[in-house]
Structures are given as C-alpha cells and as structure tokens.
Length: 309
Image (cartoon, rainbow, N blue to C red; front, top):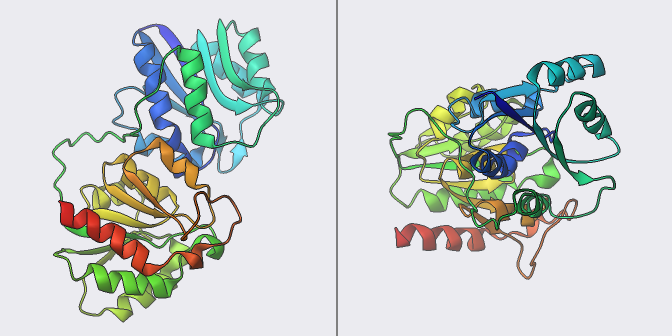
C-alpha cells in the first residue's frame, strides 16, 4: 500500500470530526488500495477516537497546543508523504496554501469546495462534495466510531448531555431535573452526566437533587475513559455537543435538543433524533431558543422510543 490519499478536515471539535467521519470512510472505500491520512486539529481528539478505525491509517494534527505548524513543516509533511490525491473539506482563499503545497509536491488531484465560502448546511455540503468527487450517490446516513472490543456490553444507563459551549446553547437545568425524574421511572442502571470540568457545579446540583439515584460523570475523565463509560448506553439526551455526536457514532439512540445550533447538521446520522421548539422546522446559530424546548415534548419522544423496544 504505497499509494496515498490525504483528507483535510480542519473544523476543531469532537462533533466536527464525527460529522465528517462518514465522508472520510466513503473516500477510503472508493480508494481501497490507498493509505488514508487525515489532517485535522488536535482538539478533535482524532488519534483517540479513530485509533481502531479500519479505514483511516494515519492522523496528523495541523496544530499543537493551539499553535499551527509552520508553512515549511507543512510542506515537508506533504513532500515526505508523496500524496497522490487530496480531498479538502475547506473553502479558500484561507486554505489555498494547501492547494499551493499540493501543486508543488506533485499531488495529482486536489478536491476542495472552491474559493468563496457560502452559507449552507455543513453536513449536506460534504455529502454533495463526495457525490461529485466520488461520482456516486450517498445513501449512508450513519457515522461510526470503531472500537477494538466489538463485544460492547449494553447497559441501562441514560446519558444526559448537560455540557454546552455556552449557556445560550444549554437546556435549562430545571428542565434536565424534570427529565431525569421522568426517566428514572423506566428500568435503568443509573445515569451518566456528560459534561466538562467547568460544569462541576451543575453536576453537583443534579447529584444533590437526587441522592437516591446512581450517577457517573465524565468531567474528570480523558476521552478514552469517556468512551469506555458511554459505549453501550441506553440512550443519550442533551445539548448539541461533542459527546452527543460521539454517542450517535457509537450506535446509541441520540435525542439532541436544538435551540441554538443548526438542526440540519443532524442529517448525517440517522441515530440522531432532533428535538426542536414547537412550530420550528429548522434551528440555526444564535436562535437562542433552548428554553422553548418543552420537557413534555422531550419526554414523549423518548417514551415512544423506549416503549417500542
């Protein structure tokens, strides 16, 4: 396997990596005799999430400790790897340096979105690009994170996604408390609170509110420990976060609360059930409608799913 392909995906988060993962796998499957390298950002945690991925063979970070590698080091990387083709999920002109380096280092084909960025659905744009680049019709709507231990033990823990990049993107905590009380009526082995270290006060508030319920939490764990906790979970319900996307890509039914982030992004993975405020067909950035998502609507959607199982 001496022929090589580079995939460039420079959006920075766990969720971004998950949203582009099906597209990366499609490129790999269409080029089975090529070694696949992913160029991405350190904050995606790609080296941990994709360590058992059968299609992505190498991962290179464009940055280290939030500092981008130099143009010279990037050139040396391209030169040493001798890529035949490059697939870039980026617009120019900001990323034209990758096109320039590709031309200089002898890349035969460089696929990218184009020069001028447009306002569009991120996940749908990637699907359209792959259909054009790979000359195929995309029907797969499931992203997948591969784990070496294929015998995942399913458990009856509910994963509650309290984490958020800002309060405007977080469902009110009082609503989470009502939802936990409702979910506790179903057979379960407890709850997992998916949040970051800066959400310790929220996690403590929830735990103190239900002293008789067993809670695990993820705020002090690394990404590998988090994966070990959440794999095989019963369902995920919560805000649009990296954990939400990871759960969906682990095959967990995922109820995502969209009130301030693009609901169209859920289209890449059929494991995601988008829940929006009443009478809203779409949600976009800065809509600030998280408090308009009713507990009863969330409870009904989850109850319907659990009762069908």
